Length: 495
Image 1 (cartoon, rainbow, N blue to C red):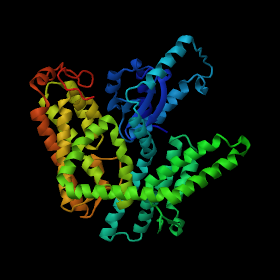
Image 2 (cartoon, one colour; image 1 turned 135 degrees about the horizontal axis):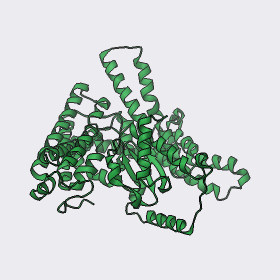
Image 3 (cartoon, rainbow, N blue to C red; image 1 turned 180 degrees about the horizontal axis):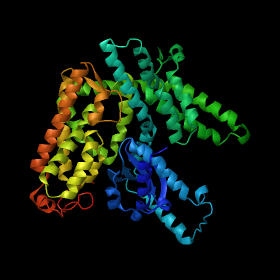
Image 4 (cartoon, rainbow, N blue to C red; image 1 turned 135 degrees about the vertical axis):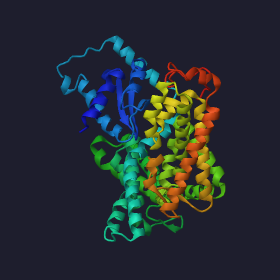
């Protein structure tokens, strides 16, 4: 049950997004409450940003209110309950009557047409969003199991609590050993199939008995293909299931459709998909290792410098299956600590803006409220509330991320290979999830050094190049423009 604080936040948000009748869908990810809207013009952006529990707002295919990790998972059910209670067909409003007029229908039709024409509804972004919908629900378990794995490693290396170490190992490894099943379940659910059939087909991949099966002249290995194989197997199962529904009589559907779906997709998984997905997964792992081993600082510079634009465009979601594949293979993803440097550059840039504009109380208040979340890896409030609307500080923040990424990439090339045992957190919150070949002390020191470089370069680049004289004149006053609502006229376009 959400606390009073979170119910109050939900109650404060609802009228500012146009009330329950303006809400068409509700969902949440790690940090954001995502709301589908009928009429965008009914939303009061400024009032939403001013709410104590709101860290920022983002407009994409849905209207996204940044609440931060933890809070969003508690505010969302309270918000859903408030919307449901206000629906005309809900028990709480059963006595109310609603008359649908022609104007209402026309308005709804206009909203639907506008949604279909939304600029962000490109095929690539829709595909990436679906990938995110499959993997994002798994992140809490990845984080929890990753932290437990790290704790278990510390205890094992120190020789402490030897009777507890096997138990922690089982707790930490159980989810990862069956992650393919969860991916299959979520894939089928996302693409309109029966979730349990997707999970059943994906379970074949992790079944120990596959070691007795020959495919392409070699024995299969349990887990071969991993999450990529599970994704492909479940997609195939959805296609087979939908095909069956077109010809199987209704009286036989419950018997024939599941059998044909599991049999067909299962055979294809064993004698094709597992091998192909295994080859792709091995290539991803080899490429990631090669990239950092040979590219080193340059590879880190490119990855760290480009991550903020990827986040801004929503293209970072394509990396989720890659991270998960690397975690399956080696226990950690080497890419995430480098990509996390982008957040460090963002924090450094925000600190420079704060120092350069001592008279702009409004903007300094926004930065002060968003910095704690920024240090913990939640960058949306600083991106969408400060650097991106100002333009130039967004570019200098990317420079800070590039410098931090180069620092971490260099040590990777020198042999200090490490990564994160889970995806989701970054910034300081990533420390408990770090793991590598050189020991926890060295790994943590390198990661901390990368953060420091990112902070310093982001700060220096923004101090010297992030604000023009015209921007300083416009912004460094008590009545300076708030970049969240009115970016300077000379800020570069960042669409």
